[in-house]
Structure formats: C-alpha cells, structure tokens
Amino acid sequence: MLTNSRLVHQPHDHGRCINAALSRARELCAAKNARLTPTREAVLRLLWQSHQPLGAYQLQDQLAKLSGKTVAPPTVYRAIEFLLQLQLIHRLASLNAYIGCPFPGSNHSNLFLICTVCGSAAEVAHNSLNELLQKASDKANFTLQDQTLELFGLCPNCSLAAPGEKAATSENT
Image 1 (spheres, rainbow, N blue to C red):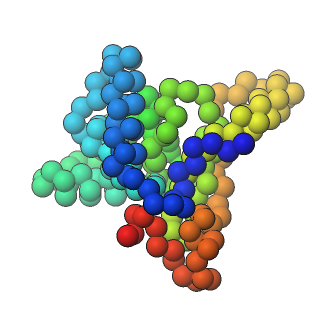
Image 2: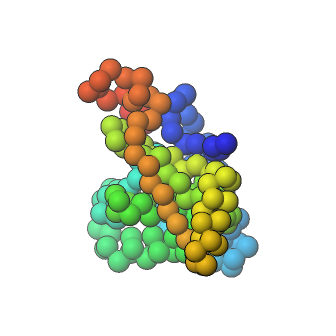
C-alpha cells in the first residue's frame, strides 16, 4: 500500500503543506537541541513551496531574491547539510537536487516518484518494499544503512494530459 503521496492530482494547499513541514522541523530541532536558523528555515520553506526538487544554485538564487542581497554558495550548502543530517530533506542523486521529507525522524523507504514531464516529485512510504529490501540485504549478509529509489514516469495530471502537452498543476495555476 502506498501512503502519503505528494504528487499533485487534486487541488493542493501548499500553505498547509509548508506549515506542517516547518512545524515538524521545529519540533525535531527542539528534540535534538539543534538550531533552525532563519537561513535553514528559508531553505526548507523553498523546498516545500512546490513539489519539484531544487538544486543548490536554484536555492541560492531564490534566497537572494527573498533577502535582496547576495547569498554565498557555502551558506546554502551548510543549510542543506544541516537539513540532510536531520533528515528533513532528501537528495535526489539523479537530479542533483533536494526535496522536503514528509516523514522526518522515521525509518521509511526513500522511494521517489518523479514526473518526467512536469518535474513534480513525490516521496511515498511502502512497508512491503522496506521489508523486501531488508530481506534481500539479510540474505546477502549485508548491513543496509540507507537507500534511495527514484522511479521516473508520469504524475496523475500529466498522464491525463494530451500527449506532448504539459499538465497544469496547482503549482502552475
């Protein structure tokens, strides 16, 4: 059973999504005695504003627009590293980009569904997949530490759109 898919199929409330992610981040930081600085929070907010993964330079550009001043690359990379360590975001290696994690602080599949047309991405949790990966690792006497699976295809909106036509998602409308 797939749970908590973030692909856009119905109207989506990004404000609610962003507020929930920031609330979880604040709670996790408080529990781990970690500091969610304004820059770190701004990076996390940007990653939750759409369901499209963003690269470090895209984040740098957007932070500069928000603050009205130049943002150095190390500032962005330090924020990304902090958010990765707390598992508030994930890195999608194939895209060299980052996306917010809807399941911070919990063990989950790190299974991503990435639309090849509109670029939206969804993280889903799948308990049977977790069990399958653990069984395969156990069978090979391999200690599984981390995994990320990236699947590419069409999101619900793009699969309904006419061939060659980019679907209008809630990010675009």
